[in-house]
Image 1 (cartoon, rainbow, N blue to C red):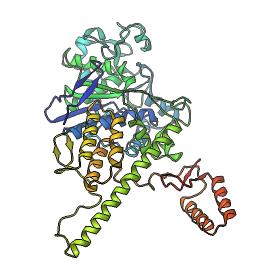
Image 2 (image 1 turned 180 degrees about the vertical axis):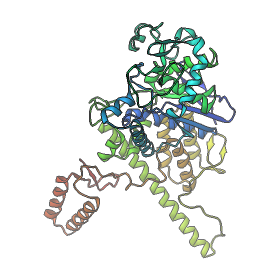
Image 3 (image 1 turned 90 degrees about the vertical axis):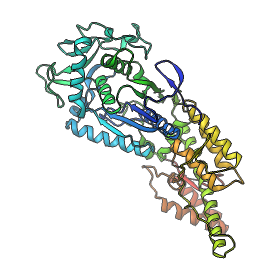
Image 4 (image 1 turned 135 degrees about the vertical axis):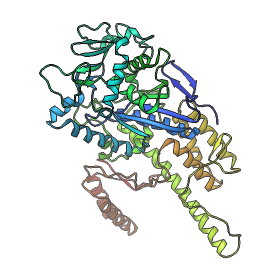
Length: 513
C-alpha cells in the first residue's frame, strides 16, 4: 500500500506518516466541554478524527485513540478569560455541575453514535486526572511558572519558539488573550486558577497554589501523556485550537520533556463549518445540532457524507439544500448496494438449487451480509485472489485518495464508481465496497432505504398512514379515477407529504416539513 501523507500544522506541509512505535498509531483528539449540546460544526471535528482513525486502521496500524471530556477548567473565552463554562451553566440551570456534565456527555455520545463514529480506546474525563494535573504542574513550576494572586501562570518566554504552531506571536495575534495584572508576557496563561476569596466553586481541589481548579490547557497535556506516552503520533482538533489552546499544550509539553518535544509529532486541524444564518451559535436558541437535523427529517449519516464531500482542511458551508443533496447521494449509494446484495442473494440461491440437483459440485457459500475483509495483496485491500481489473483499479484509486491526506471527496467518487460497475463478480464487488465503507463510515452494508426515511418531528401524519394513502391512490389511478387520485395527493401535500411520481430513485414520497 502507498505511503500515508498527512498535513502537519506544525510544519505547514505534507509529511509521510511514520509512527513513533512500529505498527501502532496513537492519536489524541480534543473532545467537548460538556456544558451544552455540541453543534454540527463541533461534530465535524469528530467525523474528521474518526476518518483519520479509520484510515490508520485501513493502513494496518494498531490504533489507540483517546478523546477527552472536559468537565472542568474551560473558560467562557477560549483565550483564557471569563468564567468556567461548567460552573456558569450549572449556576444558570440551578443544577449540580456533575449532573450538567453527565447530561451533556451523554448527549454528545448520542451524536457520536448517530454519526457512526467509532468508539475510541479511551474516553478521558478531566476530573479523573486532577491529582495528576497537580503533579504535572509541580514538576514544571520552578523553571517555567510564577504565581499571582489569581493562580499559577506559565511563562511562555521560558520555552523555545512559543506560538510556532499558530505562527501568530504578534501583538495582533495576542489580542484575544486575557490581560491580567502582573503577567510577565501577554501570552502567558494560567495552569491553575485559585478560587477567589469569599467564593466557593462546585468543583475545586486543594493544591500548593491554593484551592482552585486546573486550567483548560493543562488537562490535555496530562491526559495525552498518561494514556499515550510522550511523544505520541497525532494530536487533532478544530482549527480554532491551533491559535491558543494547542500552542499552550506544546509549551507545557516542552517544559515537561525538553524543547524538542511538542508532545505529538503531527498536529492536525479540521477547518470551520460555515453557516450563514447565525444558527451555529449556541446562544441562538434553536442552534444547529445533530438532533435538529433528525427532527427536520434528515438521516444523520447525510451530514457525515456532507462532511466527507469536502477536504477536512477546507471550509465547508452548511445549507439545508446542501444537506438534502447529500441525502439524495447517500440514497443512491444505499440503493446501489441493496441491488448488488439482491443479485448476490439470487446467485447464492441459484447455486444452492444447482448443488441440490447435483448439477455442480458442493461448495461453501458465504452469508449475504458477511462482508468482512481480511487479506491485503499489493495495493488492493481485501481482495482474495484475482479480481476484475475494474475492481482493482477503483480500489487503487480509493487507496491513493485516502493516503493523500485523507482526500475523502475523491475517495467517494471511487466508491460510487465501484457500486456502478456491471458484469463483474458481485461477491468481490460487495467485498470491495465494504472495505471502502470501513474507511468512510457510511454504514452502506447495513442501511436500507427505509432507514433513510426519517419522520420529521413536526409531521402530523405517520408512515403507515402515508403508505395506506398511496396504496389507495394507486388503486384509484388503476381504475382511472383521477379525481380521487388527485384528491388523495392534495390531502397528502396539505399534510407535508411530497408525492414523488416518476422519481428516478424510486422514492415514492418524502415529508417536507
